[in-house]
Structure formats: C-alpha cells, structure tokens
Image (cartoon, rainbow, N blue to C red; front, side):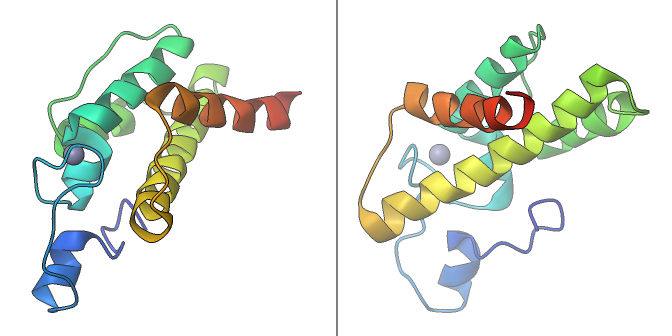
Length: 128
Ligand SMILES: [Zn+2]
C-alpha cells in the first residue's frame, strides 16, 4: 500500500472534500502525503535514521525516490542485512502509519523514543 501510494493520506482526503486540514500529524508544517509522511518529514526521517543505525548504517534520504533507489539497488538477495532492512522498512512504515492514525483518531502521541522502541519490539518478537 505504501509503495503503491494507495494509503488514504490527508492530501487525498482533502482532494475528495472529506477533510479541510491536510497538515502532517508529526510536524504540522507540511501537507501529509506518502512522500512526506514516510521520508521527508523531519520526525519520521529521524526515526528511520535511528532504525538504520541499529543495523550499523548511517544514511539519510532527501526524498522518497532517493530512498526507493537505494532500497532497490542494495536490498537484493537473501543476505541477513538485506532481510533485516526489508523487515525494518516494513516495520517502520507500519508503525508510522499506525502512529499517524493514533494521533488523528485517538489524540494520543507517542514520543520518538517510544516509536523506535515499538519497532525494536517487533524484532524482539520475531527473533526472541
Ligand atoms: Zn511532517
């Protein structure tokens, strides 16, 4: 859903006339769309950077295209690192979307450290 850009992000909901406020629930500074929410938002970019650091990688991405180009060129084969990165990205996307929905529908905000902890716990459940 994330890769295909089919999530009901706020930019899409606003175009349909369902909502009037299309600001990102993390930074409140830009329109929420797929590219912003998962790569360009400073808050989610910081979380993704922390997740990559757990795998020993120190990388930042300027935008969605930049991240996808890196992923398609390096996450090949069945190496352990490749599998961990694919799983990390899925866990990250899932958790960011879940957190965004929590903020919109429940009015609950987790701190960045708690969001990272949630993603780490997904791995603990798999490898534990
Ligand atoms: Zn944002």
